[in-house]
Structure formats: structure tokens, C-alpha cells
Length: 79
Image (cartoon, rainbow, N blue to C red; front, side, top):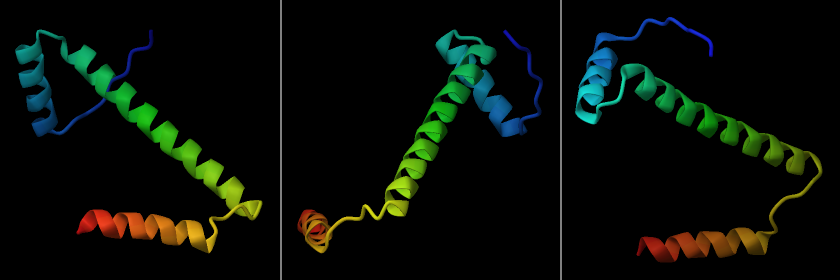
């Protein structure tokens, strides 16, 4: 396992300390857990963007009917 040192704003350090005390988990555990979740979400988002760009480059776009159906669905749900 690697060791990393970083500076965090006081408010983040305070929140981390409070959560650590409340949960009985170490600050390191909570920080790694939060970082793991963030990195997974960002990696997923980048992967989805890359897939969409590939589809666009291949000319794979939604038809007008598909766009209208989705717009109608969201408009109906907003009422």
C-alpha cells in the first residue's frame, strides 16, 4: 500500500474528524473510501463520454422520433 500526504482545508479536516469519531472508523479509512467512490464515479463518467464520442464519430445518433419520445416522457412527468 502506498502512503500519500496531502493538505486539506480545515473544514474538510474537521468534518473528517467528526465522522471518524461518530462512525468509529479511522480518518484514513474514511478518506480512502471517499476517494475510491469519487474515482469510480469519475472513471465511469469519462468512459461513458468516450463511448458517446465514438458513437457520434460513427454517426450513431438518436432519430427525431426517439428524441421526441424522450422529451414527451419528461414533459409528462413534469406536470
